[in-house]
Image (cartoon, rainbow, N blue to C red):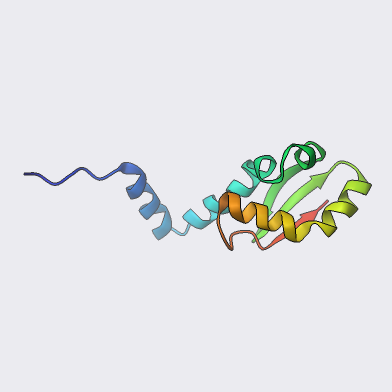
Length: 95
């Protein structure tokens, strides 16, 4: 019997890991999955803009919300961790 074919997704992730890109792609999920991670209410008041190193930069539409989110930062980081994986995003900067 022949060897089972290997899934291409595994091969692609292996190649990306060897090139040092896989972790950056996983980290980028914080931008694309921000609203799912933080929920509808916070998601409506914010927009994840970009990743700067291991920091997620989030635009906040109102100053009062920005202040409140600063107090919730640890909770939001935990939600992101549950959504995209541990240790990928270490800080959130609200702008």
